[in-house]
Image (cartoon, helix red, strand yellow):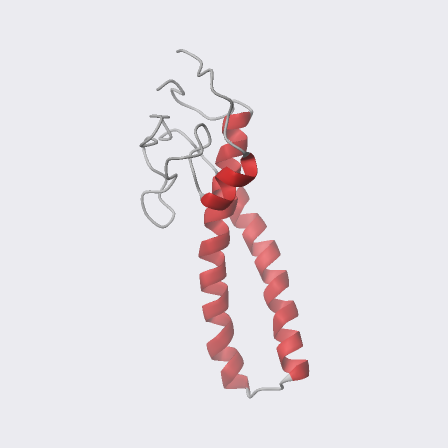
Length: 124
């Protein structure tokens, strides 16, 4: 197994843009939340990565607190009927969960790569 001489990509950039943790160029995901088998640019093997439940826990805590705060603010300022809350918040939670989960999962994968905790062959 050979080591790549390039410095790893920026953690923040890899997380926010959902890019490869090694080169920062290739897309990390093949689908919405499915991690690609390999980076298309540098060939990093991503099959053995395991973000586990960490990203989901952070998303639940952060998004849950944010949505509850926003629901209270909407109710206090606008006081809409209950049906508005029943239509609004499931959409906000669903979209927010997917978007945040992509970023948090990409960030955790980038951290694993940075600290050499990413399983599998890291050679191109």
